[in-house]
Length: 229
Image (cartoon, rainbow, N blue to C red; front, top):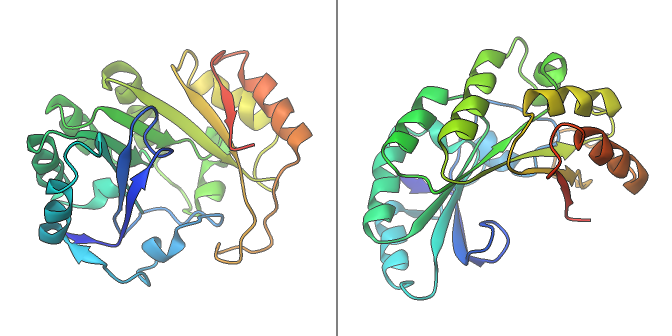
């Protein structure tokens, strides 16, 4: 497996743990606000292969608790289970980021005990999902299946939404709240304007709007929080 990015140590990507973060290329969504679009469109060059990564990881016993796997969309990789199993056999915890488009593979990984923590992006309410994800006629059933699988089967998890002024409003978070009602953890993350995102015209919501959205969704997910402000 080719690795397209490696953050050797992070205190942020895996809650309550010291981890490294592995970035894998490829994604089946085309979110216009994506901060890692070079992993989506294939312009990011690999930085190492898995042999080199496991050599790195072997030297991090006692320094790292776990590995956070992100992308792109890691579940697109046909060898992701083997990759995670090798990490598990080395004694590290595993956090998996996913967009929710591959519920069958997600279920398989959880059944095999290969993910200790799952973070899934909730792009928007069901009716706005296709526009927000950049994919016309996206299969929302897969998103719904992944939500249920995570809430029912993941040892630990979070849902999160990157909030973009042009895509989200109060109604969005009423519908999202009903969709994931009772979730253990849900975070709203304010979109950060950058030159590297596909649609450079997109803007950040105000702190007042973020507070409104948080209060809206807390009716259904009392544990919801804002992250990064």
